[in-house]
Amino acid sequence: MNFPTKNLSVVVPCYNEGANLLAVLRRFREVLTGRSDVELILVNNGSRDHSALILAHELAKPEFAFARAVDVPVNQGYGHGILCGLRAAQGEYLAWTHADMQTDPVDVVLGFDRLLARPNPERCLLRGRRVGRPLVDRLFTRGMGWVASLALGARLVDINAQPKIFHHMLLAEMDDAPSDFSLDLYLLYLAQSRNYLEIEQPVEFGQRVHGQAKGGGSLMGKVGLTRRTFAYIFRLRKQLRTARRPAAEIDRRIAA
Image (cartoon, rainbow, N blue to C red; front, side, top):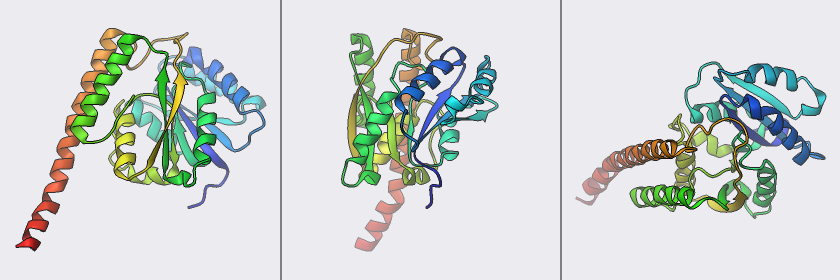
């Protein structure tokens, strides 16, 4: 497989993030100074604000030549936007993070360099692990992780932390990826089931300056996100059990 121009593609899904876009671009410009191996893909994920106008105006500037936009006309979910960006990527390695500036873009670059330092980076998945968060947020996160780990038989910690960084070949196995916020859980489970080495990257998780969180920002948002995640966990477990039944039946017939 050939990757024509970049070593890393960073996908940032943007849904009504017009107030944050310039800050995202400027921060990425700072952390990518001196590097030509990274591209930034901003996915305008069906935004209803002025995001499209801002992207068209800013990305025409030479100072932001490292970035480009992918347009999704109608929002079909957080995961769908990320997948659209990943499929348009030209990097050998892929990453995604948020547009809310709660996770510093520098974490992606540091994480990528850390992943490449491993003996077999193409068989590694780097994921963020948030530090310095309020107690309530930590409790919600741990609860989701415990339920997911018990239900799926995997170690799933801080599921929604960013960034996520992995080799392009893992994308080829994401045929049944969900289109909502469960994409993070799906990727972690998929990588573990394929025996990828998981690398944790501690990240400071700051406060959102502009706009509203799309997932678990408010208490009701956290409850909604948890409910949707639990529904996906048990749906995935059911799929896994169904897939195992034919194999188990074949084994019984051979044994007989």
